[in-house]
Length: 333
Image (cartoon, rainbow, N blue to C red; front, side):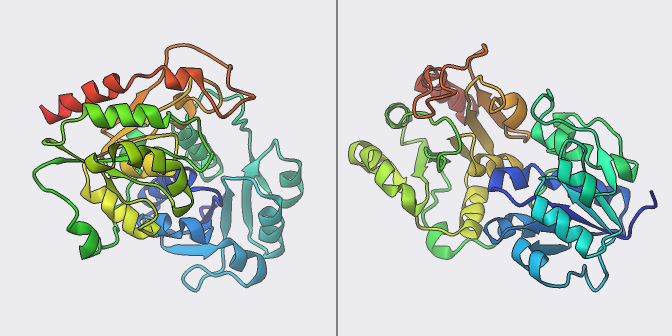
C-alpha cells in the first residue's frame, strides 16, 4: 500500500494500555517524519497522549463517532485499529478512510477493514507493546523490536507543570518513593499488610514515602494509614492525572502491581517496581513495565490458582517486602 500522509492510532482503553501504545507513534514518526499522527482515545487518557511528542492530534472517541474528523485540516487516510472495537471500525469505513488496518481474527474487521494483520494476542508470547507494533506491517514496517529498543520509544516528554502546592511536599534530600497499592480491580494486588511491612522496613531518614490512589480507593487505603500514617504522606485523591504525572516525574520511584501509574513511572525512566502474578495472560511477559529502570518481582513458576478468585493471589503475596526493600537499598547506596 502507498504510505499515507496521516494515520490515526486507535486505542480506547486504560492508562497502561495507552502508554504501551506510544511506541507505535514513535516508530511512525521516525520512519515518516512528515506524517501527521492522530490518536483516537478517551478523555480519561487524553493527558497521556498529550505528553507524547510524536502525536500531533488527539481525537476523542465520542467525537469520532458523531462528528467529521480531520487531522490538522487533512482528511484521515489511514487508521490502525490497535484495540479492536466494532463501532469504531464501522465508523472508520463510514468516514471513507481509505486504508483501514485491523487483525484477521475479528469477524467485523472483514467487513470494515481493507488491510489485515494475522495476530492473536491470546496465544502470542510477545509483550503487549510488541504486539501493538505488529499492526504496522501493512505500512512496510516489519521489524522485530526488543523490549530494550521499545524502552527508547516510550517517550513522555511534554510534561505538565507540577503545581507549587505539590512541589512543596518533596524533600530533595531523600529518595522520593510512591507506593500505589490499589489497581481499580484491574490486577492481582499485593496486600495492604505487605505495604505496611515495607513502609516499616524503609528508613525514613533516607526515604520520603507517598501513598497514592484515587478518591474511590481512599477507604481501602485507610487501614494502612491508620497503622503507618505517621511515616508517609497521603496524596490519594488529591491530584488529577496531569498533576499526578508531573508528581511521578518529580519523584524517584514507584511500587505497584500491574496498573497505569507503574507504566507511567517506567516511561518516565523512574525506578518502576512491579509486583506480578505468574499467570498468563496477566504475567509480566505480556504486561511488564518497559523502561531503563523498570524491575519486576514475580515467582519463577506458572500458576493458575487465582484465575477464578481474583481477590487473593498466593503467588503475589509470596513476594516478601524485604525483597523490595533490599532492591531499593541497592539504589540508595
